[in-house]
Amino acid sequence: MPHKVHSQEFLLMLSCSVLDKKRTNEILNELPSSNRFNEDQFFSLLKRHHLCELAFQSLKKNSFFSSAFCSQIEQLAQVNQIIAIKGLAIQVRLQQFFQANGICAIYMKGLFLSHLYYGDIGKRNLVDLDVWVEEKFFNQGKVFLHALGYVSTLDHHAFNQRQLNFIHKCNHDEIFYHPGDSSAPVIELHWKLRNALGNFMFDPIKEQEKLMQVEMNGVSFSVFNHVDQFIFLCVHGAEHGWYKLKWLVDLVHLNKTIDFDWESVVLRAKDLRSERELRLAWSLLQGFYGLIIPEKIAEIKLTTIDDFRLNYVRHLIDYEGSFCDTAKEKLFNLLYTLSLNRRPMLAKELLLKNLTNTTDWLTLPLPSSLFFLYFPLRPFLWAYRKIKS
Image (cartoon, rainbow, N blue to C red; front, top):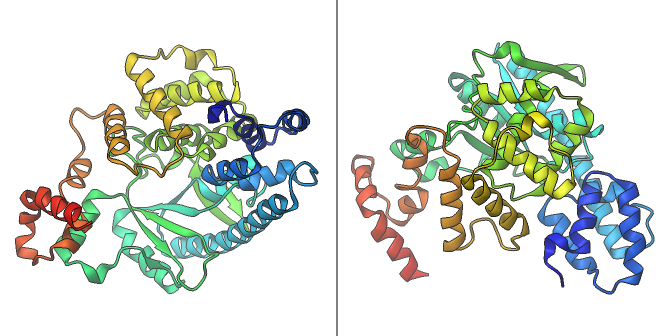
């Protein structure tokens, strides 16, 4: 089997992901003369990168694949439609609650990417809904989610208040799921945007006028404008090492939908301290999708550190294991993440989350007054868990 990123399975996935039916048909016409194509591996790639729904749009009514494969991707596409419809209904109720209580909310990624850049809320794979609210209103949003049947993935009863406060300092959101409805999307309620590394320095309080209003089901939602959306997606993807191609595909569809003035995009990226992530994203768009890098983007020159970053991303996209599943992968990810830091010093939340965490607390429950002991005890707790396992 050839290296995955050069394999027929991978190339077919790329063409399906951007709904390029011409290129998809060209690849499919070549497959009967090849004995190298593996349907199971192709399906695994689609699931791994969350692209089954787009593959269904490109491959339905195609006779090359087995009936089992066609049935699987059709079923996944139908389930995603249900999740999207439920997600929209929940999002409408959430926004109505925010509006009634004078709470400003910003909706990120999710359904709005599907609606604005794919033409259908169910075409793009939907896992969660990301919503930012001002920190002082976070608990109100949380209470309303509980009223909708959602519960937090964080077991608040397992930890004392000192531990819960530490978790809040180290994170930017809390994750909620619906235990009674497996097809209801997960909701990530944010009190901070992703800026621990000092990039995408969007101020959600001061920059309200830069947001865009999008109406769905008769309700108006605040989302990033197209320029800020593109930059945000570059930063989000970079922070995750572009582990899922789904995130890069969003940029392709956004670029196809919106006619950008790239000089303005670069200037805005500099304002947000995100021009490095913008440049890296365009290198990947060129490498995987053959898009021509806009002249103004190309003027941001790549450095030796950028080469390291891009090599790590290519490794991650090709990686068949789980994200950070080995000590080696964790080390590479740490080095990569540190390379993205734009602050003079590492942000406090990044440092704190590596000094202790919930695993330590569950291994050795200590009263709130002795919380400080977790810091010197961490190496011993880690060694204890290794021996036990």
